Image 1 (cartoon, rainbow over the protein chains, first blue to last red):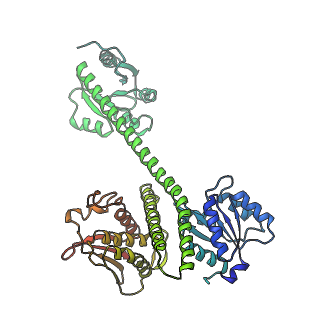
Image 2 (cartoon, chains in turn purple, green):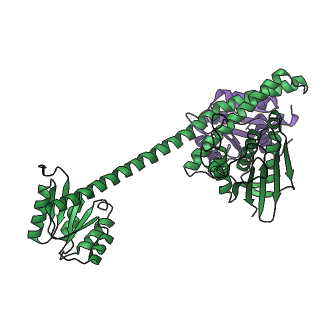
Image 3 (cartoon, rainbow over the protein chains, first blue to last red):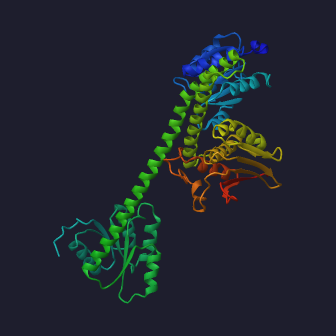
Length: 130
Length: 373
């Protein structure tokens, strides 16, 4: 477990429960504080209700109710949440174009393995690898 | 001649400003089974053409607008361009006039005097051509639609396949990490089985990417994601990743590199090209050594993959870069035949070339050349 990860908090937003839980587990094992949401609306509620803002949001795009695009629009419209970095986590064939459209800070293409996922998270949260 | 009902063969617009001649042509058309619309001059003809007749018989000697001009305007307007036009003219018309008529877009030309049977047969022929054109157009439309549906399906299917695969890979990867933590590096039977499972999900992942790539290429939506990258690093990572597979195939895989090569490329896609070539070299390499050579000059970088296996017949050296093409029987070797097709498109999109060179002795030599500017 990496000690400096303890101060960092990640919000994982994905409608697929297995993927969401696997990602949460991997991040927790690394020592991150993690919260999770199953769609964009839930994620917005988590942002509103939590006192500590996450340091990074891992965002799936294709989700029921409020999808990743709608979530991002609401997030950017709210001054308190707008600056939280977002990494898009998607299986979309046009992933890079969509991440750019969303002005995302990072991109994780599904399928993804644990180490590349952790590398991307670490880079976006701390600006460098451990 | 068997009796035909008037109108049974379609509706013809007859444009002629000489009443007697117009009546005579209309009569011939009616007895031949056509219903007739009449126009007494060129502008009337242009107006009635919008009533969508099946064909137009148009006299060239009109006083208000010449028949040639009427024909040109009919062929220039989207709503009338598809209606076949048969020009008719006075006796002894010079051949250059007939040529002018056909160049104005007319579909046929008759010189008076003509018999009812000749007029009937000519209009009938024009209608048959038009019907064949319509069928061809409809078929082409159906085909384009079917291709679009297929490509949309492939895009959606690859997205849907990736979701469970993501979950599966994360789980397998998680198990591998747990196992590594407990075993202190010793390779157990469980670890070996797990490595196989991970390798197979990796293969599945490549196949899904290939399906998606073929769909986006076919839809014309294939785009590169270029960044500054070191080609040597891209090639090294792929070659290292294949060491285990080469060993399993009783082959050796060696990289010869002249050093780092900084290029603006799509590193994942170029990696896919190298992966295809190395994978093929091992697969068709008959357990003999495979050599990957990376070199570069001022203008271009070159990746060469050499095997000593079954080789490729000269006749197949171009064909294998086509979609779903293979030089070997699908019964003996698995795979979808997409790898080289996709590689070709990737290299082309980078402004480079990929080809097979005649190898000395046995085996194949694949060469990829990428511009360095």
